[in-house]
Amino acid sequence: MIEVLISSEQIKERVKQMGKEITEYYKDKTDTIHAVCVLKGSIHFFSDLVQNIDLNVEYSFIQVASYSGVSSTGRIRVKSWIDEPIENKYVIVVEDILDTGLTLSYILDYLRRYRPADLKVVTLLKKLGRNSQVTPDFVGFEIEDKFVIGYGLDYNEKYRNLPYVGWVKGNG
Ligand code: IMP
Image (cartoon, rainbow, N blue to C red; front, side):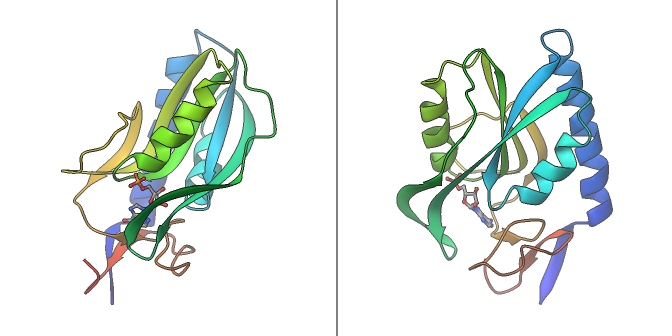
């Protein structure tokens, strides 16, 4: 049984606003930003967000694995990495959800080595009450500390294609 936490309409509305916030932030600084999609969970958020940003947006896709099931394995493995130079570019990392921030701080440490002009973080969801290692620059929704699924987020590769964010009753 799945309970809807954030409806498809709410996501759409918020993502549109976030696109505007991001456009506002960058428009006096640059006409082009480089957006890094953190696969697989950010696929839908990334796709919807960049369509709402009124700037030139270059894309990169990276995939790291840190989770197995609902609990962190504590291990981070890089499966694929950026394929475009980002030196002196305005880079925005697009995450699905910020929990401990372990995955993201690892990604950010590595991206900083390429010396981007600016490195910002946007996340659709941020879990409240979690001690995150990363402070995101743009946040879609703050949610309670529950394991959520849908709109790209999975539970053992299931539920990613749900158009809303929800949680499976009985799984935290
Ligand atoms: P962190 O390193 O603890 O911040 O975890 C980040 C990654 O773990 C996210 O990008 C997700 O892929 C996954 N994750 C964390 N919490 C959830 C959740 O509630 N549902 C689904 N995936 C999650």
